[in-house]
Image (cartoon, rainbow over all chains, first blue to last red; front, top):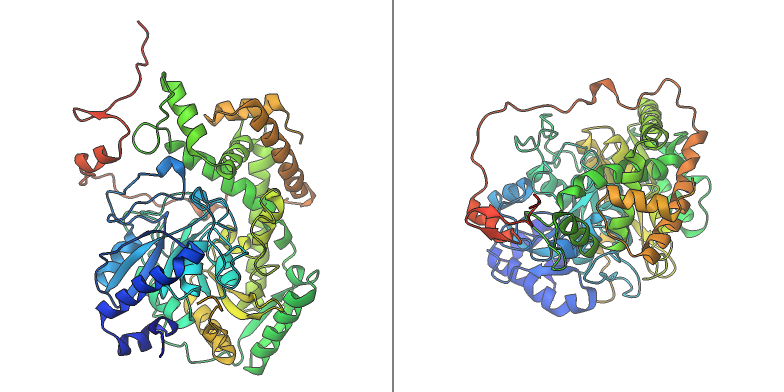
Length: 463
Length: 94
């Protein structure tokens, strides 16, 4: 018997009623999530819907807690919906639950969740990636057909890659950030996880658009992303970022070279292009993102909402002890780095310099997009790593985002598409980056590649 | 850039974060290592590039009164709430 959760939306809707679609998700969660731990809360009485979806637990929906997997928000329940969630509700979505993440979306493995890691459905001794690892694992394990995540440096694409599903990061400003708990407001963007490119295009089409509640949301017209998914890529120009692949070896490199051959067989023009500053993206990212985070997270002070320390006697103790008890080690590390980078005497040498290198990176991308429709790299430098392998070495964890962070720093859209499996049976992924607001062309290119490869049809052995 | 315990304490005070000494030493070591990686930004010639692009201004909305959050909904998330106010420790001395 076909599992309706193996099918893309359109086929699933033709087979089952909206009630049955949602019930199929709830029973799949009952069967599978004990092994994966993707969900932090489940909406047992979820309304029927033609678009069942899980929300990363830093996106607000009033009927469920919004914890950010942090002790400081353990009992928090948002009094309002995120705009993306409100838009989904008007289009027949059913919120199935909230998914695990690295605390406050700070991490690349879900190991920084205060309630324990999510497991990779392809090998439960390995991480699902992060920070949106719960949404990616839930979709990969066929518990729900779609998920929302959020991106600051690759937090949708990297877990999508490690879990073998499609992950989209839209242009900065394409989706309202209202109701997304802020990490780095100049980089944050809500993104989408699905099994197929067409489903991702449908979900993004619903949540995209200007919102008066987010002044950085764009008034740029929202294209119909589904229009030319079948058009193909004949004659389109793909630039392979030389600096990203020249040191890559082994299976990731071989897999990427195969993906290039597939694009060429579809009639695309694929050539190497230089983006000289791309290798500095992680260094820039950890100054800029953490500087913004240190300011954004100052709102968690134990006064208006969230955890307040029982030990605190004075106002100052309320601040220091509530934050000391309520934030995990990685969140504190990032607040400390960001505070340092903005502090008197270091601002120009760290934050100012990082911003100037970022401007140069943006320039380098502009030059490359002058000659190419898309830029491509592997989504990640390696497949899913073992749980615990990088927890003692923050820097090696950070470097997992080396190919994804540039898109956030520049604000361009990018998509991760499954590109096959390594010898261990772990998923690999192709990243396609496009110029600002070129999502429609990006989906077209990703769909052309997906149609030739169809890796999404393979199901994790677990389920 | 080497971060020692005193510098880490200065930053922690700015960030309103409480640390035990041992945790602070560990944090100082990790920050030193990460800042060592970040120092590679010094290799880049950034002449001609500004910290902030001219077209990056955040658009502003009109400053008009709008409905606000419901007080009861806000009260539900408050750690300590009484008679329509957040309760905090006394901040003015005797």
